[in-house]
Structures are given as structure tokens and as C-alpha cells.
Image (tube, rainbow, N blue to C red; front, side, top):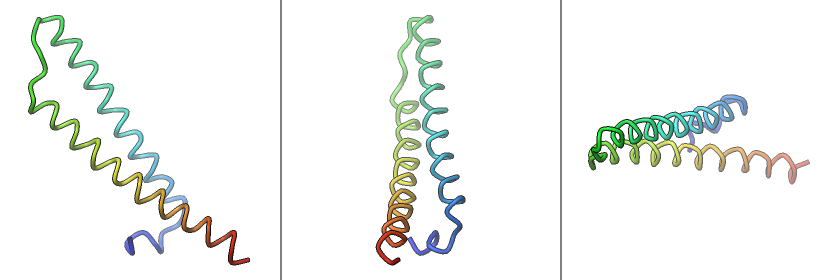
Length: 81
């Protein structure tokens, strides 16, 4: 995590917000696509599902890493006064 240790806290919070937005956007697109396929009496194939899960995993890992950095900075700020 050395690549985000020297970044401004607002950049890290912006990264967290971006990852959350990405997950919400993909989820909304999945719901829209599944409704469209349901109207045509089709089912979503495994390739389409896997694409969504890859985004969920990548964005989720990004959120975890950035939240860990925020909590570490908060811990340092509180206990090193």
C-alpha cells in the first residue's frame, strides 16, 4: 500500500466514492439487463455474470485497501498526539 501512503486523504476518500459508484453503476446495469432479458424470455449467460463479478471484486478490494489506509491514518492521528 505504499502507493497511497503519501496521497492526500481527500484523494483516498474520492477513490472510495469512485469504487462505490462503480459497484452501484454495474449493479444497476445488471438489473436493467436482466429485466430486458426477462421480457424476451431469455436468461443472463455466465459470461455476462462473470464480467459483473470481476468489477465487484476489483472495486471491493479497492474499497478495503483505501478504508484500511484511512483507518490507519485516523489511528495515527488519535494516538500520536
